[in-house]
Image (cartoon, rainbow, N blue to C red; front, side, top):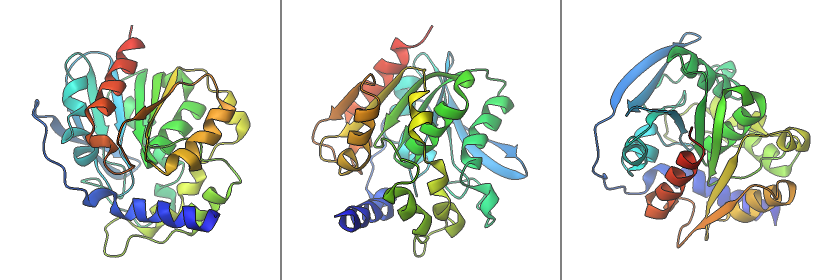
Length: 258
């Protein structure tokens, strides 16, 4: 059973960026870069107001995951929206060294906030970005206004899913280094870390997404206080295309804005 679920997740990860996405009208975000410990990180920025950090999924990018589908445009109506390309993705550099990945992905978000002189932000992540976001909420709560976890739940420390990520090979023919995928497991949380998160968190998951059983249901057992919203007629790949998905993000962020 575990093996079949892991195979399904591997297929999801490999296909994530191949889904055809039609651009959604909105403002044109500005493209910028900053230096993160010698690695050039690219990000898009749009709008004014309280800051929101958007973290994309595996083999995706800020543009694919957030800009083209209209999430940035919706939030930028009254918020400052920043979507970064994780190292190994999009227009960011793609180093081969392992120390550039794993927990460093979380620290890259901190470095981005510091670069933009932002003390606190709403943190939103989808799929792999949800893992990064969860670890960020647990390790840097003082930098968080609210959390939104999309297409992901609890990557539990010591679980079979953590071990799966440690053995997952790089995408054949892709540009993301193998060092990235092999260090995803380091984003796992212990139960203690999960239960210590005190910032407001909302979880969004497609009603047809296999991640619901794999990651979200265990999360619901541990954090019954976190609202979980199912996106209608959505699987893992097409969830970001749904109007309900971007509306739920906007509602939660605005609800927790000052």
